[in-house]
Amino acid sequence: MTIGEDNGDRAQPATATASPLVSDGQATLDLRTRPTRESLGMLPGENGHFEDRPEGSDGIRTTVLLPGGQSVELLAFSLGSESLGSPLSPPPDSKTAPPSSTVVNVNYPSVSAAAEQLYAYREALGLDETGLASVAGPDPGGGGAAGGGSGFGVIQGLREGFLHIEVELRPGTESNPVTANYLFRYSDQAS
Image 1: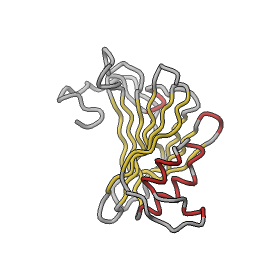
Image 2: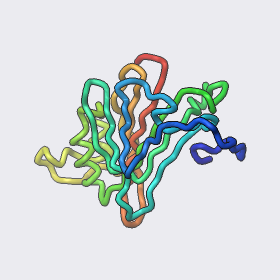
Image 3: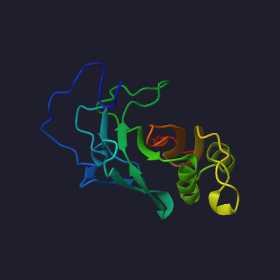
């Protein structure tokens, strides 16, 4: 199932509109406070909103503003938000529920290129150092040899208030062999 689809039940065109998340190829994901449906571009009656760009395009220049005043800049090929909640505790009505997660998908030409960006943003994203080294390899800026990570797996990140961050590395496409899914989950429960 694709974000925004509800097993074939399509929402009727809404009269109200949400703020567009992507404008002129740029997006700002403000996670300093819990995002709203409107701030993520989710229209009334939708349980998700998805933006993507074709391979080879300029992508979506995405700025993620994080609690504590830090930010990261990602060149996404897609990003999506949904309000489906957890499989163990779905909301009563996903078409009116607050957003439960956003994923920013980024392609890299190699594991070492992904590692370079992940290490640059390790502190801002609160990435677990052991998980990062296991998945992406040793810090390329730390004088060690590039590479050595598995190139796939999930790296746990920041858990603060409503926000939980994870980054998943996995195989990508032929021209961009590594995909990173930057996952931002939202919860009412403080960690």
